Amino acid sequence: QYSLGWAAEHQVDDHLTVRQNLRYRHLDIDYRSVQGLGLQADYRTMNRQAYTANEQLDTLTLDTQAEWRFRTGALAHKLLTGIDYQHLDWDNLTRFGNAPTLDILAPNYNQAIALPGIFQNAHQKQSQIGLYAQDEIAWDRLRLQLGVRKDWARTDTDNYVARSVTRQRDDAFTGRAGLLYLFDSGVAPYVSYATSFQPQAGTGFDGNAFLPTKGKQTEVGLKYQPTNTDMLFTAAAYDLRQSNVGTPDPLHANFTVQTGEVRSRGIELSAVANLGEQLKLRASYSHLDNEISQTTTTSTLGNRLAGTPAEQASLWADYAFRGEALKGLSIGGGVRRIGSAYTTNANTQLIPGATVFDAAVRYDFGVLDPSLRGLKAALNVSNLFDKEYISICSAIGCRYGLGRAVYATLKYNW
Image (cartoon, rainbow, N blue to C red; front, top):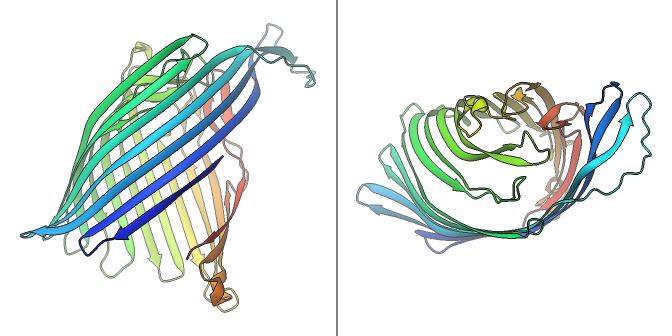
């Protein structure tokens, strides 16, 4: 996979700023697996299936916007208007079928496994154009945000197995409104309401394109920034309803099925604190209570959505050295807690929760030599101790979460 793009901004004058962001991404997948099924009557012979996927994905996103700052009497405005465009081109060839059985007490891992027959062969193109406008209005200590958006989406799917062609057209009008008040103490309560529309790429087991996901959310919260400190604390409670939410298909492995409607209610807490120039702390916690509120599968009505943890938490600390010998060096470390979640919408089995640790080391070469100013190196490690845990489950079993991953990056700003 690779991606490239740009982010451009030009301040025309004190009142107008224009921006454009573009990104192109290419992804190529060659995936093959043998998947175990249940045991036969002898309790030692395992039935197995073979699955392969060859996929190519190209995406292009382009967002062009203009921001005006002006006043109308006692009201200060920050008006944002723009147009964005997204295009997706996806080729998908999957094979699925039986594989040789395996004696689990005397396994032979050198069996020849024939390439299974073609199961899905599809080409999908999706494009979306959106027009939007948002005005942030300030009046004394009151802040009002009003936003509107209109989207047009087109999805063309060629199913070469079923020899069918579908042309799907969707459009939606969405908006949002928020109100916040700034008190002298640094406390800022707020309330907001928003609707959403998001086309979904891909196809289900039947080869048909997915419907767009739509949602509406009400949120109330409190922000607190203590006077004369570099700290911010936030608390929010929300009620979100989404239709056509994708979940793992309980009947067909490696596929997704859309659920009628999911209602989610929860709270989110976060804290950010910069304690001097050297130590930075970030912490967050969320509790989610969701249920399937509408579905054609009545047995799952009222159940929790599969693969969605009820609790998540994280803590991260970053320390920058200031001594002459280590100046320019900073280290970081943190912990993430992922709560338990159900394997399927039937809610018959739980995926256990897991706790993983992360770490980072960064160095600014500009400290060594002024001519190297802007050159920075970083080493990030996720799941530092390579903990084994279950991340997701499907019709035929579960998969491990990502093991230890090390990322080395070199960045230059000028």
